[in-house]
Image 1: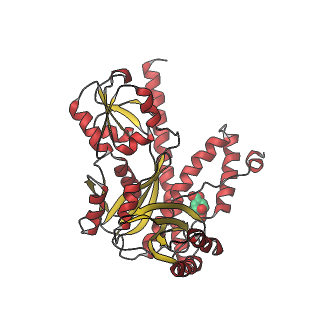
Image 2 (image 1 turned 90 degrees about the horizontal axis):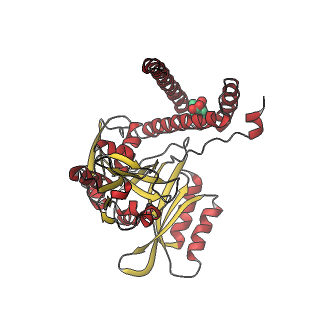
Image 3 (image 1 turned 60 degrees about the horizontal axis):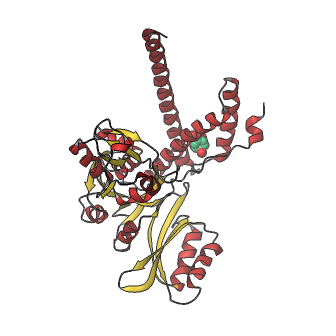
Amino acid sequence: MSDQALQVLREKISAVDEQLLALISERRTLTNDVAETKIAHHIPVRDQKREEQLLISLIKKGKALGLDPHYVTQLFHVIIEDSVLNQQAMLAERANPGSALPLNRVAFLGDKGSYSYLATQKYFSRRPGELLELGCQSFSEVVHKVENGEADYAVLPIENTTSGSINEVYDQLQHTELSIIGELTHPIRHTLLTATTTSLEKIKTLYAHPQVFTQCSHFLAELGNVEVKTMDSTSSAMLMVSELQRDDVAAIGSEAGGNLYGLIAIKSNLANQKENHSRFIVVARQAVSVPLQIPAKTTLVMSTVQKPGSLVEALTVLKNNNINMTKLESRPMPGNPWEEMFYLDVEGNVADGPVQNALAALKDITRYIKVLGCYPSEEISPTKVAAASALAE
Ligand SMILES: C=C(O[C@@H]1C=C(C(=O)O)C=C[C@H]1O)C(=O)O
């Protein structure tokens, strides 16, 4: 194919892509209008029956156009997730009048390009107001900035699908009066980034955040004698490599972050597990109320009395109130050796009967209990379509 023919085809593809974007944006406007109706009539945001009907119809129509059912399903799962998250954000904002700020000052670990920076951008892209990014050197600085009013929000990674809980962040939650007001998950795609076109064999020094080394331990074990240097954040690792401009040093970070520092991705998918995601929490000085039309999560911290079965007893309270627990973490209590603080994420809204009943019962049987926050759940499970309906002609 001549260069010119290729150019013509690519221009056509770009034009189609532009139309796709315009249509996606039009769909978003329509789904936001649907949210207005849901606000006015107190209807739940999620309607999985409607999603299923939509998917079945799209799969059939896609098949007629030669498109694979799995491809169509995947595509529309992403589109529907976006629509549900946007509607949830709209409802949450309306339920908290005055909460929308013209400027959102947000503290996070690292600088431009860190995973926390990317998560911050994602979370606030659905919310009104400008974003002012306040990069910090440590998690305690991130939390402090919100406590002392320099920032309105903090975005903190709390757990990762490969390395588990981020203990330092849990420990920050023990000592703060801030409330969790939101959550989000973000894919963490670790990539080897260099300042020059070089090869893996030449790398002698590797810069990254300690969490990254934990998540990429299998890759590091295969590397042999490469010196590993820990940095405060992924972005400081990337900055270091871009300043050194050497062919024997590399950073591990996201490709998108590396682009901001002019770095080249020489190897991707470095995490031990292919599906590597981090869950972030968003904290603020004021708690928010979550409308009952959207799924909520509540995070609690508690310490139980020191007697056999006291944790089981506490968890039984959740069971009796039909509350699903999505996470349980224990952390040592400073100054009280061998005593633990338990952090629990449960599905449910503090304004709703089951969580209120459970809290009342837990107060009677725990030594200490506090609600760290109730916030919209951003875990949007994709609607499944029964194979038979999807494949029916
Ligand atoms: C847009 C709506 O809200 C949600 C999003 C949907 C979508 O993006 O198509 C479908 C059903 C709902 O879960 C709706 O109810 O129609």
